Length: 129
Image 1 (cartoon, helix red, strand yellow):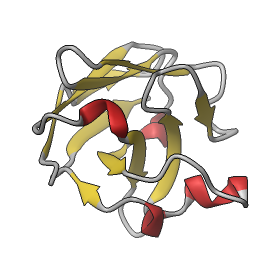
Image 2: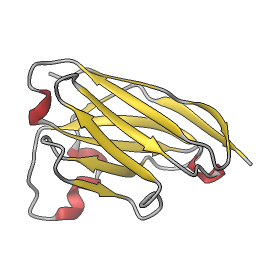
Image 3: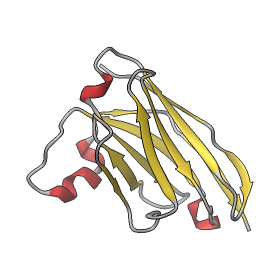
């Protein structure tokens, strides 16, 4: 069982930087790959990125690649989403999620919501133009 709590959202101007945090409960945090998703009003929840349990591998959506960075600190049971050069289209509720499975035969499965069994409540990020 994993409980997740996001923090760090807010209202910023385009071009600004934000760092989201996700605090996880449980003793086996390092056994979970962690994902970040976001959901804008009227849109489907979409994949942002993922980090492996060890932190050695990361994957990003094309829309954020080069601007966003995911990291984790397993000693602190935390995962982070560093967001640079924010754009108005990044406005959304951001969710962290945990996946107990480390391998998929289809790599695209790591981008699917249903691959993640635990979710946080989300934190709002609003980017003004």
